[in-house]
Length: 131
Image 1 (cartoon, rainbow, N blue to C red):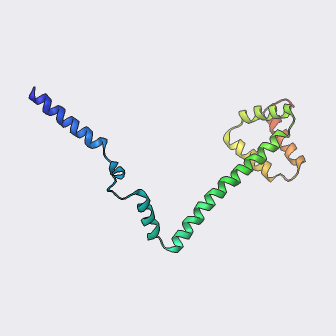
Image 2 (cartoon, helix red, strand yellow):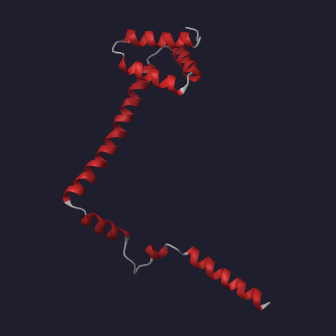
Image 3 (cartoon, rainbow, N blue to C red):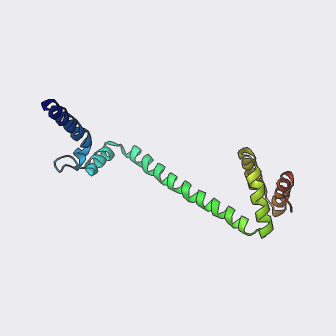
């Protein structure tokens, strides 16, 4: 019986030790995470700080550019007649990933609406989607 109590006490202590691992950041006497961040920031040179800020801004701009690009594609697709939208959906589902990427590139390189229409017609014909 005493052995069971000792084993239980050891298991309980090991559980407590693992349960509170990493909780030192919550103790009031430990350094706050804000001061650690500030210390790390202050250790950087002005050049490194500038590069870090620039990188962050570039990442934000990429997301904005991607969302604008997606919006343009959606606007273009929404201007198509309903039947053609459905035909494009069916052809898109039949395409492999590489063919989809090729189609995207061709449509991006096309400069006129007639060229885009020809590209769409080619892919619709290729996948036997009714026009």
